[in-house]
Image 1: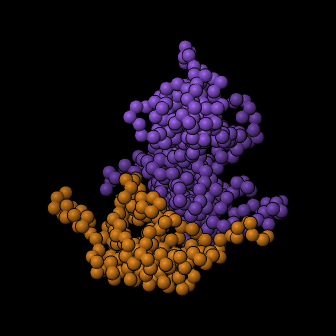
Image 2 (image 1 turned 90 degrees about the horizontal axis):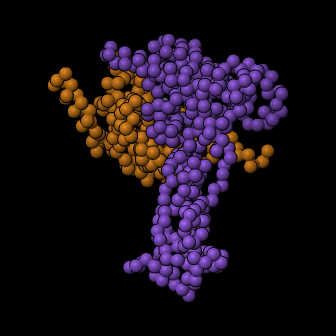
Length: 350
Length: 186
Ligand SMILES: [Zn+2]
Ligand SMILES: [Zn+2]
């Protein structure tokens, strides 16, 4: 793999030193929840299609369409090759003794070819990712509409070497800004806003909470972007590493579509690179600002894009975005360790 | 260590506005919200009170700054800092005895910002079903986030229906600064 990645033009970066993983929603990353159901062995294979038909109409698996009705019995030595799902225990009638007669009225579902029922556990929800599918299938056969991109992303292989090289470059700017902050005795966090269409950096910022408790690197970048659009309400002139990058002239002439598309509106469609996971305030500021995607290096203890909350996939909010972590993780980790040392030094001085 | 330190933390814990104070300051916050609505702005009024004095009065400034984070609460926090500077007072010290009065539950971002400023009490009118950070969408106000500030107490429900009505009136109008959806003409 290594010689191939090194062939990329201008790629003096060691993009193999880090892996980028998506930060998924709770639904996508949680364990497989199981519910109880009754299954029964099919003693006579020839009755299978009739049993499926009759059970589907008598005990439809409403809301559980991901569950397959019949499974093959894997254990060797079982006299019957198939099990059929009769019903969820929640749908079953009250019965003193579990048996075919109490479970199924024989005038609706003929018992021919069916053995005595037993309890099984089946996945409550359709699997959203391949890991969830693999876990779910251990309990009962489950259908899965695979999102191929997600499967690749979960392996850390979503981005191509040139894409990783670009990400490396952007995060390196964020790390440089973080170092500039650290040199001035401030918290070592840096952030960069990029327009992924034009591949231009729009703003670079670092943490300024030393000056203002809310001037985290992300908030600095959001205000710099506002400034690039003729707004903004702060100046960061005293911090030369916090800056707007003027657009390279002529870019838009090469793209007739750029003319047609509307004026930039807050952070719509932009990517943010930040050395560590944003806090709740910054995460929600990114929702309000309609950020496109967020890439961070390492997690943080009170982080709101994966650690304490998942604001980017929070139900009820009107804007969601993709989040990836792990970009330049070692360099970002290094920043964090040294800023912790500064923090504890400050505390000692108090 | 000792007596002084203990009594300070005790007063911070018991710090909570009286009914009369809530009546008075929420009335003032509603006046700010009404004024905003009449001027076609998000009808959220917010003020910060320290020792019976209004030290900050914020309204939403998102449109003029093109910065989507300029909610009334963040604008007010900047004013509070300015007020402290003018009066040569320590921001951290003032914040510990400052209450925020706002007509609508602070959003997730503003709730987190209030934690970062160590504001102990927030009095609000109606719930914020779209963005609320004091329980409606997320519970930031009481979340254990030791690296990013302290929790705050909420007193809610004062003139809630009125605050909701103002929001409904506002959201019926379209935000002229947002880009038009692409499905429309052009
Ligand atoms: Zn933050
Ligand atoms: Zn807000």
